[in-house]
Image (cartoon, rainbow, N blue to C red):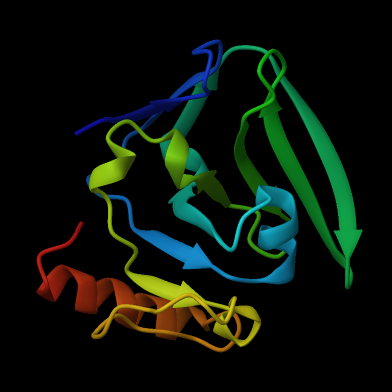
Length: 150
């Protein structure tokens, strides 16, 4: 199964050769600032399963010894994905760029210690005060699969 997505103007398109993607909502201050919203939705996929076409531009930054690269469409400036030196084999897609993104429910909410007070989180979905460990995120994926997500 191939999962696809694009920027707003369709100048950048991508495909993922994984059978499922798991979306999570991040409430950290960086995501709030960079999205201009209360949280951002991401899908984490392996770099080896991800290909994209089209002109991009990027922004690199460093924080707490971790290097980050944000990748945008060079025309419409939609942020498509980012990657970091902590997990160099992973791509963090902006979930709203996925085809059919409106049908994807987050499997977890992370960084809820920074969540906007007015946001009510759904019951039964894992929540994490900060970033989950790989084992905790794996358990959230397993729980989502048990609920029929993914």
